Amino acid sequence: MSLRPGDLVAAHYLLARCDRNGVARIPFTDRVEAAGAAGFAGIGVQPADYARSKANGLSDGAMAEVLARNDVELAEIDGAPWWPCDSSIVSAQDEVLRVGERFSVRLLNAAMPTIEGDGPTDADLAAGLARLADRAASVGMLVGFEFLPWTPVRDVVHAHAIVSLASRSNLGVTVDVWHHSVSGDVTQGLAGIPASDIVSVQVTDGVRDASLSPLAETMVGRRLPGEGELPVVEVLRTLHAIGVRTPYSVEIVSLPHRHLPLDDWAALAAGSVRRAAAEAAAFAD
Image 1 (tube, one colour):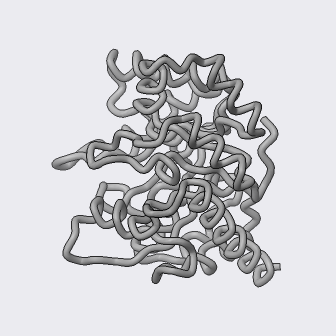
Image 2: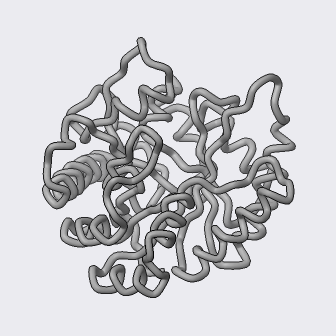
């Protein structure tokens, strides 16, 4: 894997222009070409999106060829099936891990699921993540545990406590700037997390809308850095100051920009994140 600290990864949602059912409107090949033209070093997919691409006739070989032609890596798979651990989950994991091994994918993102009622204990969650991390390690993948404000694991401190319980060297926390910013703790808790325990950073700005559910809000309210109300540079500055040196996964679902040609949108998103990251690094150093 050749991704370097500070490299940009076009997260699945950035270029997919998904419909209301989460189905990508933009084919994989077009996304890779737009990402490469904008200087992204990597791109992300979701398991169902990969499966649809295959069903539409795009083979692994064809995917590998378009990635190589555009100097882009398949860098992350977003949406690891990991909870609960039963036979259907293990079967779904098998396919995801096969893709990870085939394309030397760096990161498997495991978001905290929405769970009704009391839900599992932290120990249960840690055990599930540990099982996933052990399986991912066999194909050389990192696992990022992503906390979500509408789930029982709402902030970086809680997510890190679960990762610490799991105690796997290839397991860490995914910090999404939106989710972290709305959790209520911008710097204090984040500054106490060891840099080695943060394996992925998802960059976005956003505008809040209290009339929407938290999930809907994060899907329609994201904006380019500098166009929203989130403390993007402050979060990135804190991450840089504690020593986090991961690639930046750009996860922006911006409805106001959907009229733009895909190449223009990719270039605009990449430029805005590079400027925010440079400003954060300059202040942190």
